[in-house]
Amino acid sequence: MQVNHTYNLDRKISYFFTSYKAKFIAKKVGATLRKPRKFSCIDIIISFWKLQSIGEFSYDKWAEQIGILRNTTISGQALWKRIRPEIIDLLKVLVNKSFKQKFGTFIDGKVFKHFENVLIQDATHFKMPKSMAVYFPGSYSRYGKSSTAKVQATFNLKKGIYSDFTLSSFRNNDQKESPEILKQIRKKDLIIRDLGYFVLKVFSLIDKKGAYYLSRLKYGISIFDEETSEKISLIKLLKKCNGPIDMIVKLGEKEKLKCRLVAIPVPEKVANQRKRKAKLERNKKSNHSKKYYKLLEYTFFITNVLDDVWSAEDISDAYRSRWYIETLFKGWKSNLKMKNNVPPKHITKTRVEFFIYASLLMTNILVLPVFLLVNKTVECAMKKSISIIKLCSYISNNIALIIQNNSMENLISHAKYSCLYESRKSRKNSLELMQTYPLG
Image (cartoon, rainbow, N blue to C red):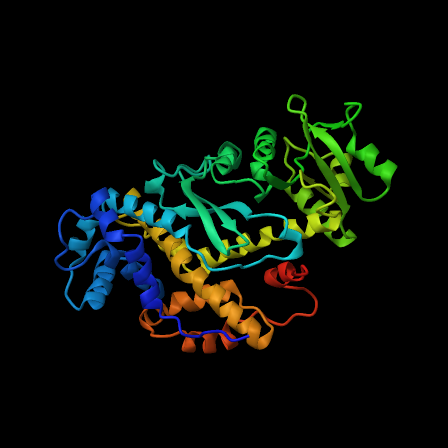
């Protein structure tokens, strides 16, 4: 299979801003009040990306990058005046536009073939300076105020691109934001979520839309027999079945959500790890029961995907794909240096929002497209996979050269050697786990 290596990143970025009429939007939202004399809003965004490799996020260093980009001189004060709430409005529009890009198919194995889109939802947190506590309050603490921003993201696994971002505070819990997925999910889509989003009413609404869900079972939720409506004890059910469980049940005292319940025994080593962790999490107000520890020997799933589409093993394999969004979060926070982007001094809410939205935009129009192309090229030539974490680090450290480079030749050549997953016979990486699903 021939792969075209020519891929001008500078043109790609320019095409995005041009095709989505970024200049017109900037003027419409008030980010640009008149014709730019020295630099534009787009220059501010691209120069911020270049700061990734420097690791210093002062206005003077930022202005210096704009000056290099536009072959002129810019003062830090001139830039400071341009970082207004209107530029955040511009970034939000551009981030939403980035969801509409098309890059072909990323993952489309047999286990996901039945679904139009496969959406994985999760959240990550960023520590903020204490001065931001009024906008991004953190956890309650006896040690005083704390500030933590929360980024909630939805990743489209089939397309290989983020399809939604939400910026809020740590105190906006996942259950409260659980219904938001209903705005983007469509018929025949699949949503995979962790326990933080577990809301029976939302599962019911997803089902009514003709879409599908997959989630872990929340501990303590009431379970009823589908036919008799009698309450089921999981412990008694496990003893009776003495192995895996796969049955239709109803969940919730009021909701009576009809769904498929699957219980899969975990290896003894995993069960022991769970039990040790649970014992460490105990406190004076919460001591786990013997029944709770027994349940840790199983993984419980609920879904409305029936057994003619998914076996119990398919369900377990599909849920493992959530690891990928966690890997992407790690790439953002550590290797794209997002956790270091917010300086403790001279910080404002607008500056915080700019750092996060600009980084997310960079991920969607630069990092992920490069990853998809390089990974496809390397797979064809070497039958191996590129590490998104290593690639994030490479892009971050070489962003100026990457943006200005004329082709992908050097990037692909370097990625073949420095961004590959390490070969491990004992365990597979997140991409290999998903690519073990038979294609077709």
